[in-house]
Length: 84
Image (cartoon, rainbow, N blue to C red; front, side, top):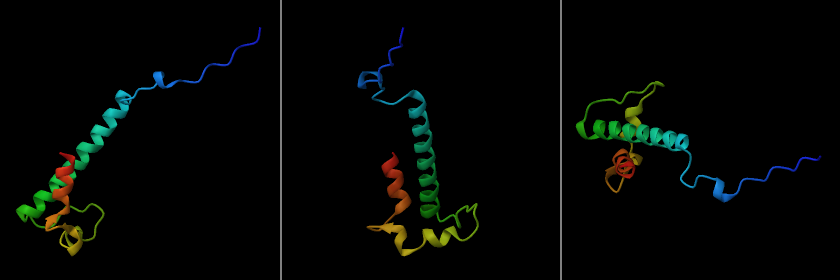
């Protein structure tokens, strides 16, 4: 006898909230982003000197540039507020 083709998955078969693995990956990435923004915000407000820059170069020049602010607020602080 001939085999019938399997039916394609329907919307009822999908996870509307995402799989637990997908949610864990997104939560991990969000925590990393919030930690990064928190670190850069702390550096800016505590005046702790140059930022840790694993690739070399001058990360401090980026944080002190005129484009590092939006409406007078440092961009890392805005990013941290959006993560939280």
